[in-house]
Amino acid sequence: MSFPSLTIDPFDEEFLSDPFAYHDELREAGAVVWLKKYDCYAMARFAEVQAALKDWQTYISGRGVGLADFAREEPWRPASLLLETDPPLHDRTRGLMNKVASLASLRALMPVWRTKADALVAEVILKGEIDAVEALAEAFPLRVFPELIGLREEGLEHLIPYGTTAFNGFGPRNRILEQSMADAQEAIAWVAESCKRENLKSGGWGMQVYESADRGDCSPEEAERLVRSFLTAGVDTTVNGIANLIHAFAENREEWAKLRADPSLAKRAIEESLRWGGVVQTFFRTTSRDVATDGGMIPEGSKVLLFLAAANRDPRKWEDPDRFDISRNAGGHVGFGFGIHQCLGQMVARLEAEAVLCALLAQVTEIHATGTPQRRLNNTLYALAELPVSLTPAG
Ligand code: OVM
Image 1: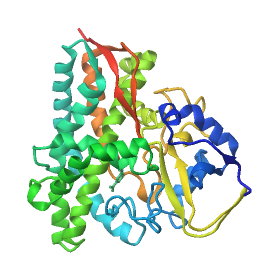
Image 2: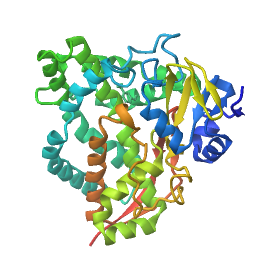
Image 3: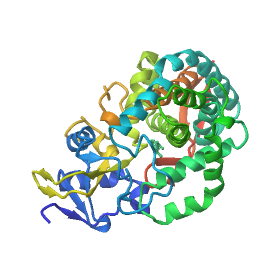
Image 4: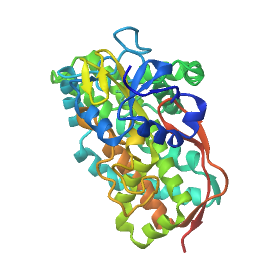
């Protein structure tokens, strides 16, 4: 074994509670390292992570993007037709989903989302001290996303627990995964039902996937599985993205003042929060061949853990990387991944964040922490359980 071998467990509770404390060690150890505990390779530097994400022929997704190798073990649910596939199948499914999840259909919704965010912030601001996770980060996506997809109203409380479990599912079968699986049985059944055509409203993105199937782009069975991708990837991610954004400003009050002085920085601020926050910490790939690297050879069929969040704070790429600085151009971060699998819903995520941020800008002069933020440990997401803040009303 020619690669540096580390005993570090990126899925243990200590690591997951404060992953950034360990990223330096991973990046400094080498461009490619060996993780003894899981018999897998890992990359944490920006250049290598980005290159691996780009090289989808070598670093494939079809054997799963979690620790489990689908060539050796059954996935816990039927594989995603987007996330856990390679071309040519991936290109077909991604192509039809790109048309459904178009920027054009989102543009029309933006004024509606802005009005809803304004109303939510107006409600919340009256309460003084709040938990921003529940009051804003969870509440806002749940007010807009189900409608976007065209979900039935009953059972929406299952969306977050389902996403939580799916993201835990990319890690090892540790206590975190076992517990969330046990908790999510009802949510899993509800999501499966919700993906069926008869449970989707016309006009929503869900039904549009079935209409794409009607045109011959995919089978009805594939449509059902593709709708599941929206439900899996679309909620716990944006919830934590918004929580992270508020957290960033609560911890860096001078940045909030800077944004208030120049609201045209809002888009930059969101991008910077995506770089800095590390909401999606990691994804795996599997090597399709022996790969020669400077440090040695990675054999075919190896799992490689890519640390997106570590890449986004790599000092080789970013100046003063741990600083949340809304003046910086964070463009090119890999928080949404890179290459053919780059997040399909990234514009939904950005527009949700923008709606909330603009509502806060209009109504709030100061955001400050009133307690210690609590983490919710997840094998993939750097998630917040609780974010106590007080919002000072404007005027
Ligand atoms: C999916 C999917 C896509 C992206 C992320 C994700 C749980 C799932 O297609 O099901 O995370």
